[in-house]
Image (cartoon, rainbow, N blue to C red; front, top):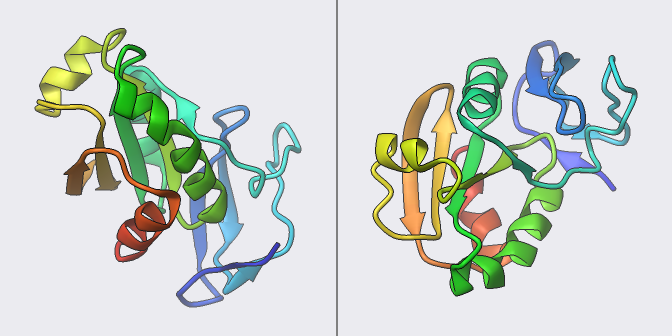
Length: 152
């Protein structure tokens, strides 16, 4: 699989490993055929959304140079459960373009309040610690990819 990245090839980006949460500094390239974590050696391209709490969310927001996409959801929410496979597919399609996280609003009610989540699923895109956009309601993988791509 080849992932295309816009930008200057002489730059580097910081990404948080979805497997061990260590911060990696990697060259910013137009495409990646291979990219492994310097700590756990797992592939940064084999990516699934990561469930985070308040400290995990803050760690990724502060340490990621790529957009962070957060799905605020709950286990009892039918549309949330229906969208989960599409969210996972979009995360895989956008590995090293964006990092996809999940926040269970039942277990992290404080985060739901902090980010003013009024309906679920709500997907929020952050650049650094700043929210840049949000959408509520279930989406297909391709719609998610199209929406997030504008922030890459």
